[in-house]
Image 1 (tube, rainbow, N blue to C red):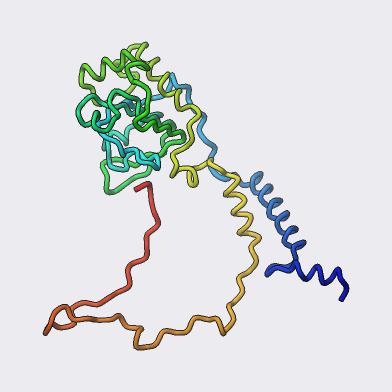
Image 2: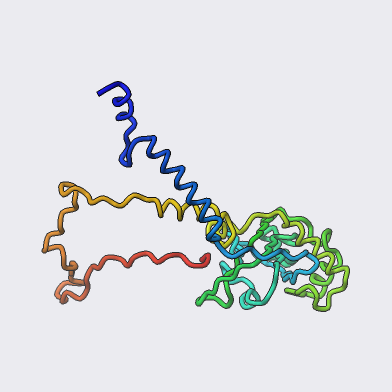
Length: 265
């Protein structure tokens, strides 16, 4: 065997030589480009509306934690059935009561969400909502009265819990709401939304599909490495008495498998 053959052997992998592996990677990329052209990764994202044309829900908050760190509006069922209403964006502002003051969110713009994606929940009063653009200020948000002086007077002085723009709002108040929504124009999606929402990182899913189509067939494990069969004595569930003199009233069963996560609970 010559030196060149010996060098080639050093580069062998479980799937062939490095040259073969490189050729396989090139084939995967080619297949991904074809899939990207012939099979779109998901529905096209909706064309965003101008902020002036959006239907915006503005509501007062008394606490933090909803939306949660994953950007899920309804994680703690805040605003209940209001989340089921039709809107294009949501603005959460801190109230003026003692609860809002204790959380450090009073009189501030707390968070903005644009482009809702709703997921039904059988255990809550309304759907869980993720957003294509989600901006969470926490306790560091801008002053609500400075950004929307007329709307702030309306909500704080009249004890308005929530309001939709366009319903009895003046043109000045509508312009204030549109200005607040534009603060989140360049915001990223809800963190939990990024890997699963349509039109988010579509090329990553295409590459994954191409890799699966090019994956080598699975090989059977050697007999020496196969897992030994469980003894017959351990096949039946263990049964233990609950108290002295009692019959075997209980049994130790394996825990049920974990269920896949849905929504953002």
